[in-house]
Image (cartoon, rainbow, N blue to C red):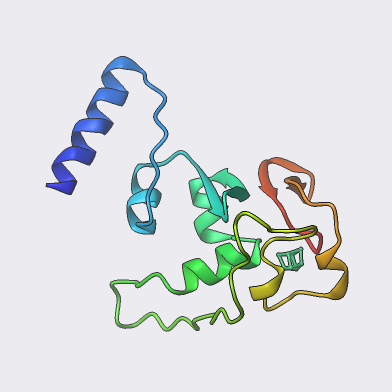
Length: 134
Ligand code: SF4
């Protein structure tokens, strides 16, 4: 059923030249149907770019952890999973700094007060990351 609906959406998109926003937790589906991907954490986009770039060269620590947990249907591929510890901040009282800091394996003290926002990664406006260490 899911495949039928996705195929229908892709057909409609091609036929009517539509722009579609598709929200999903299914990374494999996101990769298959998307031109651009925005990865969200706690209500904000932390990484944005071409689907191929996001899946092959993720830069935000949350994207990296997310993709490390995505199963690959190939028993010969061995990928190390990045565990996320810590707690998710209260969404109505997130506070200053990086909202991923309590769980980020790369967090430093300055992450808790930094001014955050998407910035081009290595000057590439088609790949943007919300992390002060990138
Ligand atoms: S700003 Fe700091 S806490 Fe936030 S994702 Fe980057 S390294 Fe992690």
